[in-house]
Every structure is written in structure tokens, then in C-alpha cells.
Image (tube, rainbow, N blue to C red; front, side):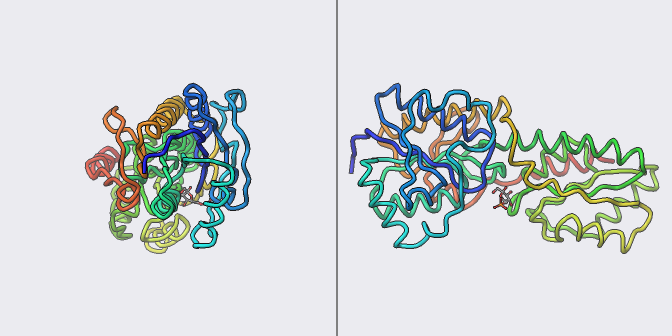
Length: 327
Ligand code: F6P
């Protein structure tokens, strides 16, 4: 059914990502330009169920483009997965006369949006907001670039002390199911090896590489471990290595949630602004149930079902290059 869009609800859901505020700002300002009302829904889908609605005007989003986190907060909602939760959300939207939604988040967010949109014939547009970069239908997600810069900065600092003390560091980065953060930050940080969930990790191969490095007078180094690696987390992998190869003195650093915070990079601010702007225009052009992304510098719309079904492939050539460059 074609609806006349008048009042847009916007929410952020799942793990927060730097640039979400820039996206909210773009949604609000574009909507105001087109004489639409915008309601901010607090705490992701939980706020839809609990009626946590706030009116957003053009001035409500002043001074946030540079801020990390999300001014309307985020959550991973269990209740929205239930039929009762969805019904409450639908009733609250109807009562508030909100006729469309823009949801900013990752695959969990789009799974919910896909189900809700179809069940209630409700227009929803998604924006890819996750540091993991694990969505199909966009080259980069909002927050990924900033997270990478945070990780690379940490690697550089750790490398200083690793060198001074002749130590091998295992640095764990985020990415439960995806190695995108690990791969790019590992290349940029000149890591000795990069262990990611998309490829099988063989501890013996890693030891073989470390023995080679040791023989060639590398007395310190960095191994990047994505948190979802099949051989375990950084602590586990460090232990498995040192049990068999004792030459290196090892240390482990788990970067954790520091990767999710901070002022968004220029790349993330521009991406978030562009996608937020396009999301409002997409609703007005009667697009529904799609994620708006950017591929090869062009705006593309991907049905939610596609965006969550598979994420883009890890670039194996980049992995091979990283191994060659770490000789
Ligand atoms: O989805 C983003 C992400 O940061 C993942 O990389 C990480 O595994 C997860 O969120 C951590 O989630 P939480 O903040 O709920 O512990």
C-alpha cells in the first residue's frame, strides 16, 4: 500500500557505532526540509514497545555530528522478537501517528525491521550502522572507519612497547562473526599475522610463521585476533602458541569497547550524512524494507532479507598481501 509519509520515527539499535549521531542529524534535517515531522525513539526497539518517544526538531540535532555514541541510545531488544512486543510497538506507532521508520543498526536491527515491516505493512528504511562492516549491500558501514582508526592507533602504541621489550603481542579486536576490523587494521598496523573467523586458523601454521620470523631476527611482533576466530580469543591463542613455541615473551591486549566509542572520522560523518539524507528521500519515493548503502560511490538499496542473509566476502587477496608484507 502506498502511504503518504508525514511523520518519521528514527531509532538506533544493536551495538552503537560512531557516526550514528551524524546519521540521526541527517535524517532530521532532511525531513524538516521536506516539511515532515520526526520522532526519536529511545533505546532502540525497546523504546517502541515502551513508548519512549521524543520530538526532534532541526535544532535538536545541533552539535552532535562530531559526537560518538547515539543521543537516542541503543539496545538489543529481546521483547521485540516476540509477537506481543511487536504488537505493542505497532499500537504505539499508530497512537503517535508515526507512519514510517528509519532504523540505524546492523543485522539484528534489520532482522526485526524485516519481520515488522512485512507483518504490519509498515514502511521502513535501514541505515547500516555497525563497526563490524558485516552487511551485504554497502562497501562500508557507518562506524567501521572510526573503529579502524582507533584500532590502528592502539596497534601503533603497542608496537612501541613490543619493540622495546622484545615481546610478541596478541591483540584482540571486535568482530564476533566477521574479520573486517581485524583484516584492515592488521594491514594498516603491519601485523605479523591476522586471524579471522572467515578462514580456519591452524596454530601450527602460526607457529611455523613465528619460527621463521624469529630465525630472521624479528624479536617482537603483533598478531591480530578477531574475537570470533575459530581457534579462540587472544588469550587462548597466546597460550596455545607459547605451549609449543617458547622463544617469544608474549602479552595479550583485548581492545574491547574502546572500539565502539569516540568522535566519528570524516569518512564516517560523510557516509552517515549521505545515507541519512538518502533514507528520507527513499521513503518519500515509496521505497520500503530496504537498507540504503553505498557501493562504488553510488547509492544502492538492498532488501533487508538480502542484507542480513550473507555479508560481503572477506577480500582474500588482501589477506594474502598482508602475509607477504609481514615477511
Ligand atoms: O556488533 C558490534 C559489536 O561491537 C561486535 O563486534 C561485538 O562482538 C559486539 O558488538 C559486542 O556486543 P556488546 O556490546 O553487547 O557486548
